[in-house]
Image (cartoon, rainbow, N blue to C red; front, side, top):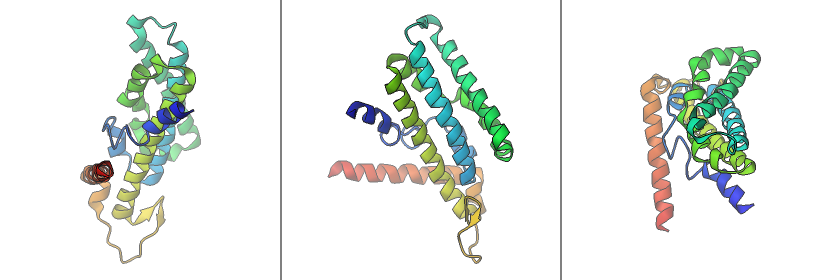
Length: 200
């Protein structure tokens, strides 16, 4: 049970894809202009990463090593298509806002990296825990990034006005430079916190 918990929590904290490994950064930088966008992007990644990890783990003993990567990509592409079409059906407005970034999950290096580095070498339960942990870490990062950008850039959170009318939004926060600046501060803050905790 402890090993399972460690596998799950690893992606949320120690190897957080966005705030630790800094991989798969297209979506975090592009879709986090609003919290709702980050939420639905995170839901899509949770589904794709967890489901693909599960299937890759189940197939790991029957897939020839020479063709494993193309097979992993087909698996990931299948679940990405399911996520894309489902989002389009239930949230057409969000789907339109996220645009190409949902289909691009198929080439997100986080997904393929977990299939190759973990799911292809571990059992189903461990692989599901790894996929879920990594995806939740990714989603939490999106929500934090989007919350800061939407709050400072629009004065809103999840579309609701939360700051006084006198607040002057910093429009740069919902532009590409704002994404890089916010991410930079988050990375610095996390390094500062973990650095201090490591000294104690």
